[in-house]
Length: 119
Image (cartoon, rainbow, N blue to C red; front, side, top):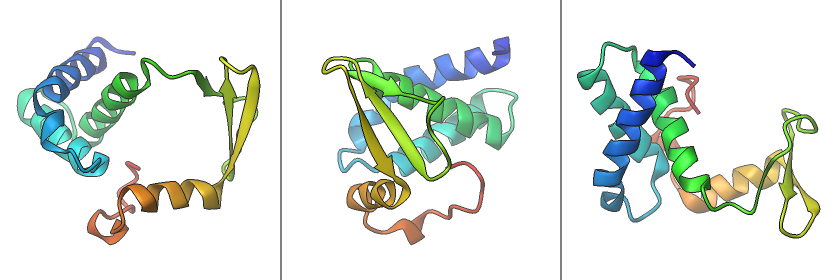
């Protein structure tokens, strides 16, 4: 990770500490968009770099107390394997299940275009 990227992730982490409570409805897409816009204004980085830093900072903060991890070696583009360290087992999530989770979290996916390659 470059020093510029690390700086952007640290700035995003500070921004989330101040602004996360403004998004109590779990609108993570909007939260990431706002953070990325802040990073673009603050640092000499592209919109894509800012979005990536904002996503990583949010994921790090949300995952700090997670009981496991994603087993990347066993995942595919249609299957995610979660390794549950506490129970010493794995959980399988298919692509349709993941989309159900996303839709349950944010019922109107048309509000945020997915064609920008950031999500």
